[in-house]
Length: 350
Image (tube, rainbow, N blue to C red; front, side, top):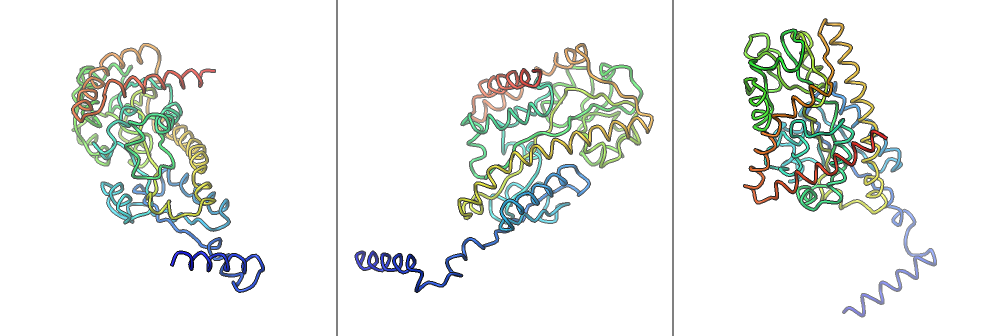
């Protein structure tokens, strides 16, 4: 039986070489196939990352000569925000962009880069650390083995904002401030603030009502929620860097021919470069908007960095303890992240 199949295969190959017996159109069919991916983007189209995704989709379309179509669905059109990860993994969607820390416990080791005052000079350092750890550190790479990761990245930083006009970030002491997780709770408590759990999209209303006097919000939240209308002071500097991810369903990616896989593989660099430009523009734009709205801008200095870092260690310790409890090497992960932060901080200073 096997011998018969071999003979048929040899005859088919010979006919192909001679150019007879097999229509040319059927030989080219695989090359002409268009592969479509439905990408879930849970945020509105006004977000900077949406613009970067649209550019990325256009880039892939051009590089593949129309054979890769990334259809970007914004505003949760493909499902609720908490379901982005599981929908992609199960094949309900073909890919997604979202925030890493929105899914607590799913990527626990990666979340080390979202700890307060972790030491990175800017979010570009965080980008480099994330992707280096993904490539070189198996504890991180195992967390992402169920996806085709296009980019792990950060974005414009997370200023600490205040409903009052303050002279220094140290004036957070005694104020009710929004936190983002258990680790910032430990940090803010160590600084004398009163941590309050408030939903991201509820910041404006809760500041208006006096439930909180400010807290941690990312620049895209300052913009999309118009927080600049109700705050008096913005502290711009190191605090927490948001972690984001752009992933594809692994099975869908594996269906691609090798030449298209190669195009997608290298598209991560394009996406990162494009998104950096948009995030920088957003930060500059929002600082200008805040200034026009009469918001006082306080920039970091060595004293404020040292003051904020002294206390962030409480959050680090809690994270290490929690990670150890999950059977992962918490201190080792933390030390590895610090090693690469130091490396890329030095590169950005050169």
